[in-house]
Image (cartoon, rainbow over all chains, first blue to last red; front, side, top):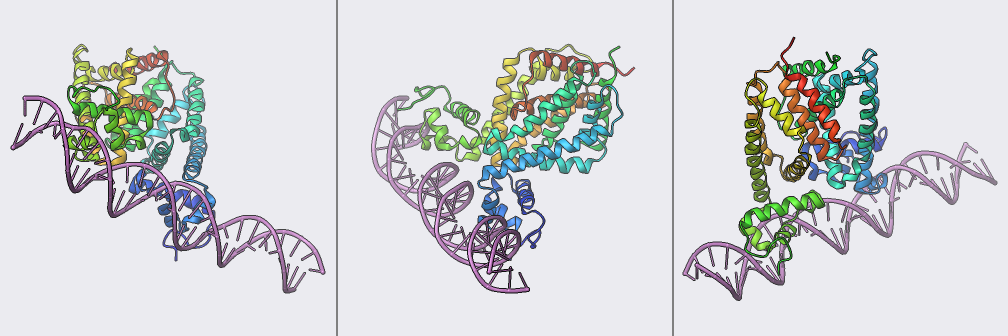
Length: 192
Length: 192
DNA sequence: GCTACTATACCGGCCGGACGGTTTTCTTCA
DNA sequence: TGAAGAAAACCGTCCGGCCGGTATAGTAGC
């Protein structure tokens, strides 16, 4: 009777519902995320959804926490892939935001945008988990052994690219991404 | 009978309504912008508002067009204030986004954020006027006589700072702003 | 008599959430 | 081993409220 994704009780209904919510925001906008729609897409009744998430707020909160956790771990592996030394975190950020794997960036950013927007619309305080991520990120950038401002500038550039995708202000070609990465890399060099 | 702003028929009810709409989004979030509330805050009846703006969409469209126009002219004067030569547009962007006049930036960004979010929530296509602004901006950056990617990187950094304010992810101190501006200025120098 | 409104009443639609049931799964103990 | 009861995991419906938009009747000033 269910019309989506998976009929079997499925591994972790929890995550299936969160996925459905994200997909809905991506395809129909923030207003398209309703409990009923999310439930249907997840192959669950509305009552069933409310059994797992007591309210829309709880649902969004869970989505945001899952996203933050995902970001934390993925960025950590991204840092681990960079050679040690000054500017390690900043280099990771450049790779993270302007790296070669464009498809991965796109998908990740779109999911993130969906969760951001939906959560923010419901209650700006729901973004707190992300704010916590930013706190640790900014601390890491400060201790990165770079000229002052360089790390923060790189971080801001990454966020800007993210925003251009959130609101679909403009699209960047792979060459442009590479050029930006190259330009930002100049900030990694010590001051003359 | 009106309870806000100005009782007199006022200079330009049009703009008074748009101001009220922006204020509402800033103080009560996107969901707080309703036709009734906007009308009340502007000191106008709901019918009166609908006399000026036939629908909520028309209201948001007008708000966004006003904002785009404001951006266009203000940024033009910002460019005019910079000395000529390569990197003029990029320098203007640094001044625009990380300049000294913090209060002005804050106020402008908050107004912009409110309009962005409300319009995007109603219908992403409403952002088209802003997208048009970005098109001309990007063209200007391309013809700026800078190493490839430098202008785009600076523009992205400005947008990132804007986003951190939209979602209140973190606040930057004046020193941090100055440091970022200094770091970005390194990108203006010709490649060695 | 036309413009620029005010004031009020109303409609249709939608959404979050509550609620009362029902089925499935696990546990317990004779 | 298997019956029985408890707990978990759902289902489907209904309700109250709000919002965008329409309609209508009236009015103040030029």
